Amino acid sequence: MVRNLLWLSLCGLLAIACGVALSLRPWQLYREQRLRSNEAVHQMRKAESDKVALLRQESRFASPAGKEELARSRGYSRPGEVQLEINR
Image 1: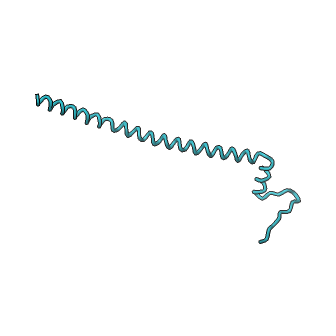
Image 2 (image 1 turned 90 degrees about the vertical axis):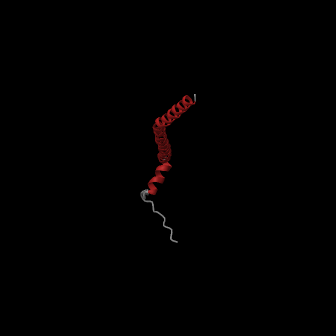
Image 3 (image 1 turned 120 degrees about the horizontal axis):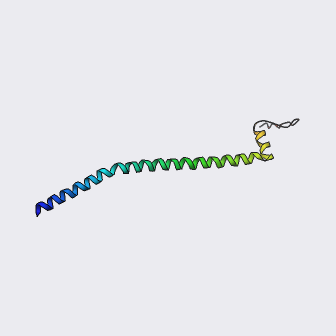
């Protein structure tokens, strides 16, 4: 009776050890895939925010006032217009 209980306990422990050993690799793969997924989500959110910023900039420069602002920031002026210089 004691001998059967010893064998049963040994087989149970062996089964548990095999189960743990065989399940380590799938959990490692799951963790790696989760990290890659989180990184992809982060990159997607950054790309979306960059897209929103570009759309705002594009809509700002599509208006006549925005076009004038862009032209003046690049140094353009209207014909015959004299730019003011401030001496400090």
